[in-house]
Length: 334
Image (cartoon, rainbow, N blue to C red; front, side, top):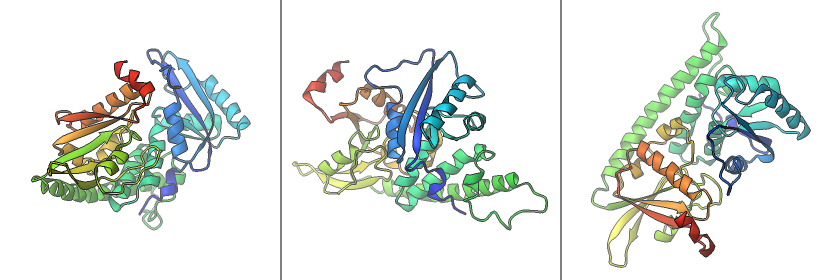
């Protein structure tokens, strides 16, 4: 049984982005409120045709947006010939179901979009397992809405008992698959821990930072390894480790890691525990920050929050400002 990578795809689709800004949310004047979501959507292969931001006192528990705005989105979607609507926050299964009923179009949230990007970026066996586990963890509470997704899970036919409802069958399939994947991931994590522990004789450095901050570029500059570099979010999903030697002759190991992002889904952090093992056991962290970004301070805070969740906040760290330009030096003093 396997979820195909196309299960969450938004490739080549015309997308409308939307978000609710509640009282207390502050919009940064240097970057539009949906700029990061736009970059995520384009990384997934979608074409953004429209953006909607609604200001409310609180999130609507039924529609996320107000029902009037949902009806307005329905009209805009038809006018713009859109294929999918993407929310900048995580939606409850009920909110997605209600929005799709009103708008008559596929609605996905931020987590599902990130999962789609991870699915297209995963190349190694470990990364594919991690993505599949994260997808299933996301899918589980949303089974009623995701019949088309579940139809891609092989092994359902012939496993049903007499009179058993299809939804219950799907739940059993997903739970069994999650159990099997967790078992495989536990084995990988143990191997990863042994591998990391075997490097105790070397000083280890781990590159961490916001996605697309330039970690892989720095990795290539420090080592002889040719790490894949692309100006897109989440270009790196797999940890790469290589040796480096200073002019003094001292040798150490450098590891590149998956980039972090604001509102990173917790199940993704859990699924990628093995990938982040290098950071958890590093002697030194190089926190790479994109100094050219107007949101560099928020990005640094987001990375620090994830590092704390991984119990890495006590590890010695050096801040490395990347993509520096003289005209942007004022960012440091803001």
